[in-house]
Amino acid sequence: MQRLQWGALLFLLWLGLTNSLDPQELLAGLLASAAIVWLTIPKRPAEVQERPWRLLPFLAFLPIFLKNLVLANIDVARRVLSPELPINPGIVRVRTRLTAPYQRLILANSITLTPGTVTLEMEGEDMFIHWIDVKSADPDVAGRAIKEQMEDAIAKI
Image 1 (tube, one colour):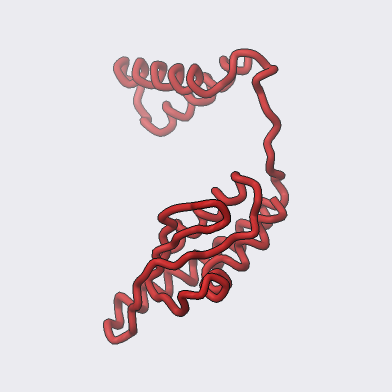
Image 2 (cartoon, rainbow, N blue to C red):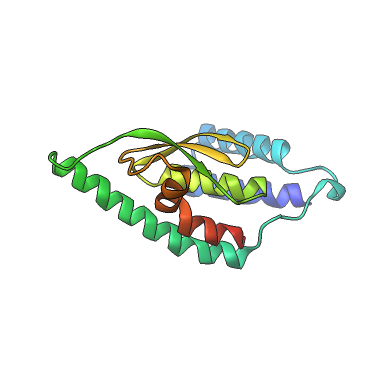
């Protein structure tokens, strides 16, 4: 029953996005919805695992992420519009205190989504980040500049 409900929801989403009742569009939507449901929804309830993260702390993380996103966008825009501003690109090693893999994944993706930084690799507690303006090669100083607020909020998720 769960597969049928998700399939119907995905198909309705397909209809809303395509805004077409053409038979080819309908068939493509049915096939895409069925494939997604078949590949992602477990057959037996025993295979379903509880989410390791909690919703309210994740919602509390979003404003922090959005603030960092806006500030990073403004910084990169200033650098693009004012060529005299220094750009000191480089790769820095940043250590994280997050232990759960899903928390590290959220942090790495959040860093990558903010302009001026890209997470290149994760190795144990270290993350290698390409940074548009390296202020320090010291992992502690670089970590405070890049991830500190986000890491504190993600630790609660």
